[in-house]
Length: 252
Image (tube, rainbow, N blue to C red):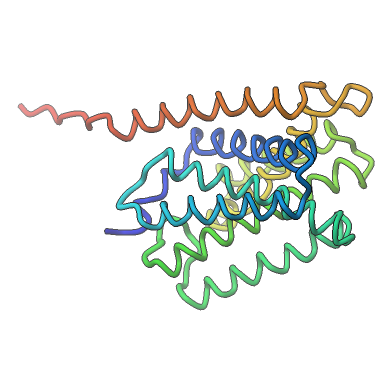
């Protein structure tokens, strides 16, 4: 069995679910570390453990199971939120330095990936080693996205909405480059994958923060509940699509 068969097709539904999962990862991570006051270090341990358990299930799976795949994506997002906050706030690196450290780690994963196999394409994952590198890249990209999103929202002066608009514009540029240029689709995929995380992070802040801070004031609990319901509905739809029998060819 090709390991790539455990990865969903990359289309509009994939990106909608990715943004929803990463936004939920931001609100749920903040819910655990701040609203419930568990703290960044303890939250990181809890959520990284969840990531490890869900990843073990994904690695053991024999094919693409939407609920399991997106549980791993969600767990990397929630773990990435608390890992970023721990680096940037508890360790005192700040958003800019934290982002630089995470960029270096992500590039290191990509360099190791290229040493193992010539392509970084998610459709050519052919071994367990590359699958592990794929998920490591996702964990670091989501952690980087959180740090970069917080930098845009807090340190750049753009605010939550301004940060979301900027990242949304960058994603629109990537879409345009995908359709109208011959640039590497693999490079554009990973650029979009990284940028959907700060988009989710800033959108999560827009939903949870009070109007005085530039948000909508839904809070971490309300925002997480709404986003969780949307993601569950999308996973149910993806599961139905996966199980739907292929149309029979019409013969003369």
